[in-house]
Image (cartoon, rainbow, N blue to C red; front, side, top):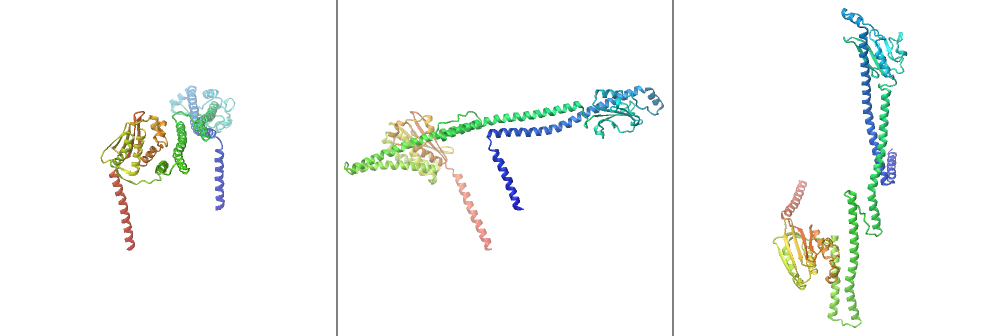
Length: 535
């Protein structure tokens, strides 16, 4: 039994999976169009069901009220004509105070005959209350009643005989003195709900109009779904074509989508990503050329010197070996810079965090660079506020500041000035390095932290930089939860400011107390468990 149940469950899952796969074989436009059509059909079905039910109930009540009003009016007219035709007899009965009322005759039911002529599809019967005789029956020839029809059920000979009072309208013929002398019965031939042919035609036309509106709604919903899907798919197709072009190597391909909706924003983001990829590829190509050039220059110097020594052209003296050593050191700096950046980006270098006084950290660094700055024909100033405390890695912050100073020296012509300041803000500490060098344009400020990017191509070889120093700075500051601000104008200098969160002593103290409290609670709990076991 269990095996058969499992088999049936697997079969149902297989059918659902096949239907799902079959559905997704169609295009997105087709699926959206069909979805819109199905939603419209479901809405129409529910709306027509509810509307038909409510409409039918109200319409039947309306037609029944109309027939009942006509029956009441006919009964009132018959009563008036009865009183006029039997005025003398009624006066005698009134004076005597008693006596049998005359039966309703054919002359009294003329209003019923007129009503039947106005409503040929309606059955009308008038009966007398005195002997229960049917005086007028529209279903009989000429409306006459046969002698043996007095005690027959009403409408016995009609084409449709109602079998209950709910299928006809009944009204009593009441005189002005309140005496009931008969009754009027009305019904509709072929209808149990008192719907005349005109009412039935109107109802059928109403349902036809509803059906037409339903079909029109489904068609319009399908058209709207198709247009909506096309409008949604077109930008997606553009992004697909753009992605395919980028895949084939055309990094200049763009979607060029405009607008403020989510798809347009996605397209703009896609274009920004493609532009970033293109720039990164350009930087990588530039990196290849830069690294190749940087490696080739010292290698050629080493190779030429070594070959000259081997050939006996040069003596292997201290000067020649010093030249080789200098080029080797240059290669070592290049490799170290690349390795340092790679480790920072991969987060493989651990941070030795501690509380640091930034002013005291940077001061000896500035002093160690004074000779280097002076040899470049520049002046160096340092200004630091007291007790600027941060929580971070001492060596990393020193390296970041040193890179900024070296960058400022590299791009500041003599005579120039470099200013290093340390400030304390509300929540952030700042280390600013400002120079009076070649400066940066707004576009260059956005690219300055890209790897192997350098300002002013004509100075690249003279500066001797690799273009990774600022990238290292950004990675270090990011790991400290801060950011680097760049300001400058072309030809007027630049200012790089490192922002690092200040050391929050109270927060760190509370955190440490919490940790110690947790440890103490753990120890206390362990002691209680140990005592319980001993007991």
